[in-house]
Image (tube, rainbow, N blue to C red; front, side, top):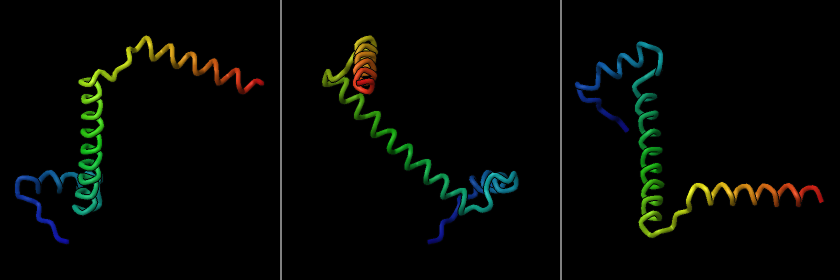
Amino acid sequence: MQISITPEFEPFVNAQIQNGLYNSANELVNDALRLLVRKDKLQKEIQIGLDQIEAGEITSADKLKQQMADFKKQFLNSSNG
C-alpha cells in the first residue's frame, strides 16, 4: 500500500525524521495510526461511561471508597485464614 503525504504535512514529517524521532515516514504513519486506534477506543469507553451516567448507573466516590475498603478487609481476612 502506498500513501501520499499532502504538502502541508511534509515539513512536519521531515522534521520528525530529521530530529530522530522516526526513521521513516512509514514509521511515523504507523505510529499515527496506532494513536488513532487508541483514540477511537478511548472515545468508545467515554461514551459507555456517559451512557451509564445517563442511565443512572453511577456510584459516588465515597461509596466506591467504602466498597474498596470492605473488599480489602475481606481479602486480607481470607488470605490469613
